[in-house]
Every structure is written in structure tokens, then in C-alpha cells.
Length: 547
Image 1 (cartoon, one colour):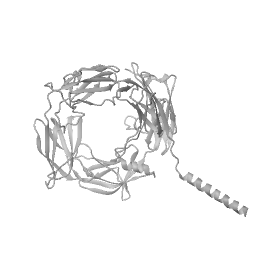
Image 2: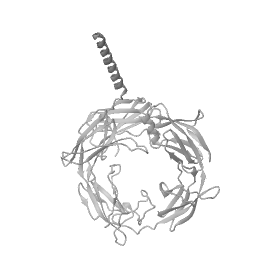
Image 3: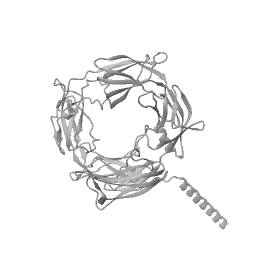
Image 4: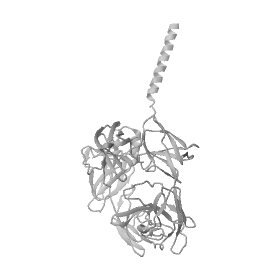
């Protein structure tokens, strides 16, 4: 009886152990994360309350934003960022009134699984200030006017000015731009034709004028600032306010002449033969098919409908010129365009997270035809079931691509079990259905370590890393994006398709006697796997360059 009881208990224990073991095996292991720590210093002392952030160096999709990891310095200026997944990151110390002494304003850091990376320090110096007053030609203060600083740099010198945001004048016409690196600057206020939206301003528009009162950037007075200094009375007298005009008209059916309501439209401003600026104001044609644009400065423009997933209307650009009066009675003749519809299929990867990433990316059909001057493209989100529809297309050769991702690559397009050319011919008004867009996921990675021989890293030295597919002509190769290298010589290239590549690694030393050192190495990467490679550069072999 006792023996039977013991056997029963043993069976229960064994059964319980099997259940626990099976449960443990069924629970996915959590990915090891890392901890990053360091200190933020200014004038040799830790600076409290500074936010240190890091963001993975990969592109966000339309529906999602890149995750930012952050920490805040304590009273000693020390910070710690926890639970950071492996990857290649950009780091920065967010201190608007300060300037980082790092050449690019931040750091690059490659993080491995389960690392505890210490001493990732930032040294800050107090930024300079430029302040002054903006007035119109009659001496009145100009309120809420944009003011920008433009660095004056020697030829071939690059610095990161991402923290330099445009200031805006207050109710006295006063502006104040702070957190500037020591250096030389020109200051301008008013509208920059190449970088600003020329329409829709509710206040007077002024042409970009530079301190003290010139329209020519080269004639602007150069302002010199040093660490922590303040340049005052950098005043700007604007020219007479620009006279702005409007343009309007109707959108009609090209075949019937009937007005078309609810169509989005967009405008292109032709700044010069090689520069344009395009925008959409979010407006749609009214019930009578009418549209109107306000606040246009003199210049060359073109307007056309902007196709959406809800309609197939398309129209050629209607060009017009704003001279010294409003433009009315513009007529945009819209026609039913072609459409492409079907389903996007992810091949070779059965991963829910990857599929969701694909659906967030979106799909573009670009059509290059002889009847238009430049490619016409249309974009749509992929639905959760993988289906898509892109309408309003011009006749011509249509090609698919993924505008917001480098991970997804078009493999082929099928229809009725027939493989179609990657560029599909479509005709006016044609609706191609039942398309199967087969997509590959680029999930191979290359992790590298660069080691220097015969000397430490030169003070002005910088590594560069580039990779291209084997067999491609290096003179015309599109290549992958250059990899960033951290202070330890580590780099990570993600989003590669499996196959053979040529890895180029080099060192560039700037200065009065610039030098270049590079080497090439053949590598093979495998899908879903990170391949490791070591590269050694010998400083004795560096070649001097002509300044």
C-alpha cells in the first residue's frame, strides 16, 4: 500500500516536472537589453537635469515613429539609460543653451545584447547668442517674422547645425537666437523662396533681407561669436512688403465639362530652372469645382489635382505666372486615370511583426511615360489583409516600390500565376486587378570592428564604411546607405539581402595635410543572421591628399 502511494506521488512529481518544463519551453525568451551610462560635463563639472537621448538609426514608417530611449542627469551630471535593445544608435545631450563639443553634435553607439556600456560622456560649452530687432522700411517693428542664422564655413568643412532653429520676433520686433557654436554667421529675416511656403500667410510677406539691410547674402555683414558670447544690435531693416496675389479657377471633367467637387489639389513653385518647391494646402475643390490659392508671390507656378486612394481622377499640370495681378479662370481638366490593385505578399518570412511593419510602410506606383515631363507617382497604405489599390495613374510603365523602408524589396509581380515585368505597362483608364506583389524582407546584418595599427586615431580622423553588391560597377552603384562608426570602431549594417558584397572601409584625416586610407573586403551575409567581420587599417599606408 505504501509502495503504491509512493509510486503515485512519484508519477505526480514527474508529470508536474514535465508540465513545468513544457511551459518553460513554450514561453519565448526575452531579448537581452543593455544599459548605457555616462556623464554630462560643462567647465569640468557635472550638469544636472540634462536629457540624454538615443534613437536607433533606421527609418520610421508612416504610421509609427522611431522609439527614443532617454535618461536625465542627476546632481552629479550622471545619467543611465536602461532596457536598450541591440542596434546602432545616435545619441545626444539635449541642452538648448549649450553646444556639444562632439564634431557632429552627438555620438554614434553600437549596442550589443546584454551590454553595460559605461563612460559615454558628453562635454558641453555655453553657446553664443545673436539678438537684434527687425523693422520694416518705415522703422516699424515687424512682429512674428522668421529670422535665421547661416553659418559661414570654410570650403570643405562640415558641422552639424541641427539645433539651429529659426527664431521669431516678438511684439517689439526683437529676436534672440541662442545655443550657437562659436564661429561666423550671417543673419537674415523674411521669406526665403527656396525653403519656405510662399502661400497662405495671414501677415505681410517680406523678401529675405540680411543684416543690416541687403538682399544679397554675399553682402551681409558677418557676425563673429565666441563661446558664451552675446552679439547684440544685429538689426535687420526689411525691404518693402511683398505684394501677394491669388490664383483660382475650376476643376472640371475633361470629357463633359462638368465641375468635379472634393478633389485635392497641389501647387509647384518654379524657383529657378533647377529648383522647385511643391506643397499641398489640404484644400479640396468646392461643390462647383472651384479652387483658390492665396498669398502667392510673383513667380512661375503649376497646379494639378493630387490623386488619393478614394478616386481615380488625374490631370496634367496647368502652368501659370504671377506677375502683378491675381490670376483667375484657370481650368484643370481631369480624367479618369488608370489603377492598380491586388495584394502584397511577404515571401520567406512568417513573422507577424514584420508583416505589420510592411503594412505600415505603404506602397508607391511610379509611372514613367512619354506624355509627361517627369515621373508621376501615387502612394497608398497597405491594408491589414495585404490588399492595396492605387488610382489616378498616368498611362506608361508602372513600377512598385516602398518609399518609407529600405527593408522591403520587390521580388516580382504576378497576375493569374504569370510573372509580369517589374515595370508594368498600363493604358489610360485601364484598371489592372488581381496583382500579386511579392516582397522579400532584407533581414541580413553585418557587424564590424575596425582596428588601427601603427598609431592611435588622429584627432581629426573619421572612419567611413560603405557596402555594395558584388559585381556592381563601383562608379555607378547605388549601394546601401553608409554605416556609422562609433568611438570604439564598431559598426552595424542592417537591412541587407542575403548574398555577396564588397565592403569598403576607410579613414579620412582632415586638416592642413589631409590623408586617406582605405581597404576593401569581400563578405557574404545570410538572411536572419548577423555576420561578423574584422577590418584592420595600417596608418603607415595612409596617402597624403592635395589640400
